[in-house]
Length: 315
Ligand code: SER
Image (cartoon, rainbow, N blue to C red; front, top):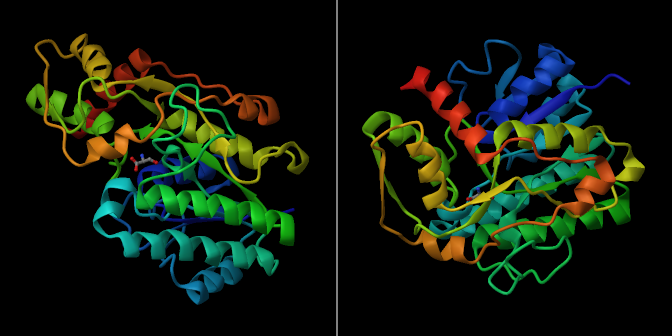
């Protein structure tokens, strides 16, 4: 079967790294990168790039037909912190984009869908350490509500219409190629930029706020491997828990201090503190390990070295 991949929201934090790795694996011209914003020169130089609105069903359908797309990765979304400021816009974007892609699959115009969920599906009443795959889920953020509803719809489309949709509950993701936009875990990227630029950082979360996080290479590897797994081995059709590394601002600051001598951190928690407090501290991902062989590789210390080394070039 000839595989042709469409990435919606390709210029974002996950999309940039994912596009590069999918192109390396399947060939540049087989991976169509699209985003609401025009290409800034990163993705368009090596393969097809188109401006595409995830809310526009007809426009997505047109790209799908034109390029004979088989697999869609839907990465367009409004993240947790921004969604609190624009609740209805977040809901409309996060849900309508998902329905557009699920309906294309239901109509057999595409074969396979990847859609990311998040640790934000959990809420203040969820057990916060080693959070199980199946547990209390009462998300208290707009973003979390949209992801939880999205998970229910993914499972529904699989059960009722046989749509092969696969999903991961990503933790906070850390990468150097692209900045995250509007998330609660963004501090863990920003801290490296500020450490190199100014030698100090003011963190918008408090020092002991432990959250589940992951280095981007591990997240992309997880994405490729869940998408490659045989259909029968995907037993969870809502979304899989995925654990990487859990740390607090204080702990990441300690790891930065080992590399950037005299680095200083101070704390000024804002509205994002409440969002972070509603999320788990660590995740039990034994189902992902069992069903499709997931294992995290990168440690906090290892990630700090990679981030600082690579960011030096950009700063
Ligand atoms: N990193 C995301 C956020 O902070 C969580 O999925 O919104």
